[in-house]
Image (cartoon, rainbow, N blue to C red; front, side, top):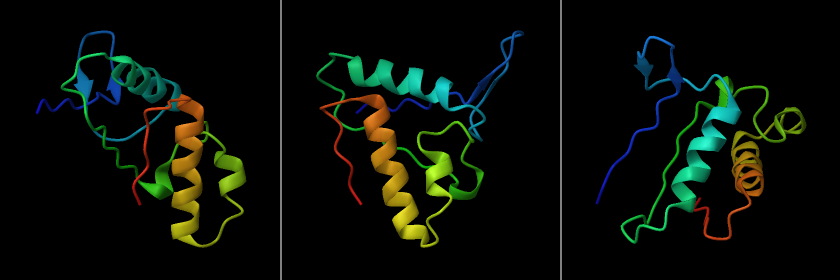
Length: 94
């Protein structure tokens, strides 16, 4: 199995960071690239986000703010992520 850690921030001078998600568009681009990879070794993409530090441009973020139960909010945001990636190969495991 090959493990790839997505950089969450890249600076013009080349320094990369692996913690904190500042912008959803960058993550979306990286995940779509991985999901579109036809390499048969790609079997699983795992994500972990800080529920209370999700960027405001995360799919359906504003709507999620009305959900009080943390577990329901996470399920809602996971489904929103899958919808935004429009990937038939994505399976969400809870």
